Image (tube, rainbow over all chains, first blue to last red; front, side, top):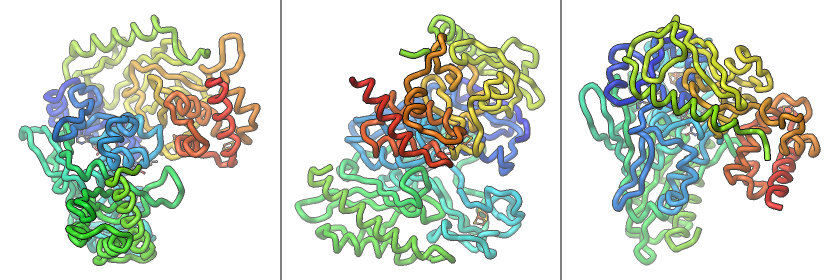
Length: 333
Length: 204
Ligand SMILES: Cc1cc2nc3c(=O)[nH]c(=O)nc-3n(C[C@H](O)[C@H](O)[C@H](O)COP(=O)(O)OP(=O)(O)OC[C@H]3O[C@@H](n4cnc5c(N)ncnc54)[C@H](O)[C@@H]3O)c2cc1C
Ligand code: SF4
Ligand code: FES
Ligand code: FES
């Protein structure tokens, strides 16, 4: 790892100034940043450690929304019993991610901005990677191993998969991101935060340089209580998703009044499956309609070499998650 | 029960002192190459060798690091505490697990500078001063919960935290909450047995 200047500001204004003056990267828990620096993928000239910004800590469950400070730790939230009851999809997608040690360190702001695990992006021995060095090509598409790449949202320049779990719960439930940067404050629908790779896979979000995520808010809707995160992995625990689904339902008698479906492990960005949601609205939620919704969710997937399994697995995961959400809507666990 | 936490007066008062002076705010961007210890709130240039303070196994230590020094390097190379192991060096195996302010963490992904002022417990800090082992160390020996032993320091720290967090309710829960520690020798069933035995002796 190359050396770098290190700043540890104590308030937002100083942090924004330090990023502006140093041109440095933001450091939160560091489980992505330090990792990428050690393997030479990122070589920032400075790091601005924001973990001293006490104003970005904490979370609360309010009357109409849940607010998360960007520095809240994954592990602490996953174990919050009020949150488990109010929004199971938000806690399940946290404790099924990474490991206890990583969750004790990783912060929510860093979590949503984690980088892809594409092995060619992470290995500088491969010269070709448009995301790491724009214009160099794509080792994955150029005969590489693509069984863990994106079957939604990829481009001819990059098919890297967005690996995070929690983001799927956020996009399913219309979360918003609150930021502060050199240009002031703004509020961004979570669905607008990440951008598709297109011709510029090095650009992953709409955040400006030095723009700090301060909090994340999730509106409370009835489907949040009857929600679930189902994650299928290559091993039972401590692995990124092969396919996952963040779902929630609100029933009116038998009929679906509201339903949310987002897909993990399969797309270039957090991915909402709107057509699958529409297919269920106003209709009874049965095993059959859940399976149909799963198929609809993957109808326009673009299979890559070795990734056909994701289409079948993903459809099954969506259906399974919906059935658990249904039982929760009916008062089950 | 154990000597795992540090004597409160020494460690804690020192940390609070550091926090307060840090919050009072050294100016941003000022490199303090020769200062006594790095102050939160200030900046460190890339070629600096800042001093940090860690309370390791109850003893306050002042050490010189580089910005890029990770916590595990500071523990092993600077302080000579080689009980903490480096496996993957990428947050994937748990060999480098230590307790930081009571939480289990991978010390390979934490910058030493970010840990400034923290309390760290490593495998060397578990036994009692009279040399008697921590119950989790005894349980690992009794249950034969290792073969080569390379993952064991990390497993033991993680296992202690697993019980403290309340995540040792069943064998399944232990497996889930010990999944951040890989064992290439495959001692997993015996590790679960060790955690269960300590949990049960605590309950009893
Ligand atoms: C072995 C391993 C397994 C993992 N498994 C999973 C998994 O199964 N599921 C999963 O979801 N994740 C997984 N992760 C990823 C992990 O969850 C993320 O690395 C972590 O959440 C990032 O949080 P952090 O605080 O450490 O971020 P950092 O590493 O500090 O930062 C990450 C990025 O966000 C930026 N940043 C951080 N905070 C802010 C902010 N407030 N405003 C603006 N920018 C900011 C940083 O500049 C950086 O680009 C795994 C990681 C490892 C190492
Ligand atoms: S898929 Fe994207 S990240 Fe992976 S090698 Fe291709 S360009 Fe790089
Ligand atoms: S050495 Fe730190 S997790 Fe493997
Ligand atoms: S005992 Fe050898 S790696 Fe676990």
